[in-house]
Image (cartoon, rainbow, N blue to C red; front, side):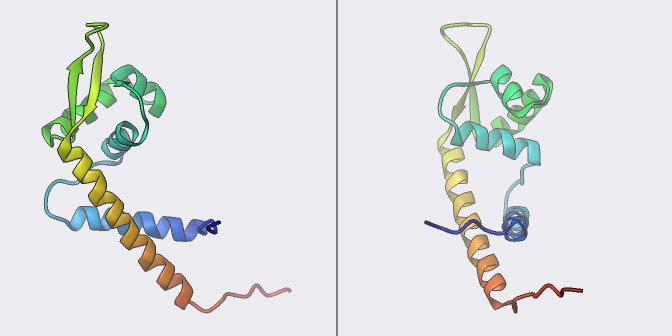
Length: 129
């Protein structure tokens, strides 16, 4: 069983991941766009604007704006639900799947870097006083 990383290590992985995403060629995503993207790709099932808004506890217009940007980048695609034409389904794309694969690689590298850094630091002792 793997040990749970310390909160400081998790923040370090997040920082290194975000920095790598910002530095790489191409557009970077806002936190909201990334949250919507990851929800669509990591949670199974059909996703709708209404469902994403409820899941992320944000307004439907905020989800629509995030999906507009993700659609421009071809990371998701919207399609009218054939069962309920009032509803729009959010679909994954090949480019989005590739982005998720790249993101996993970036996070793995960030995690390895943070682990090496944490292992190299001397153990901090708390003084009783």
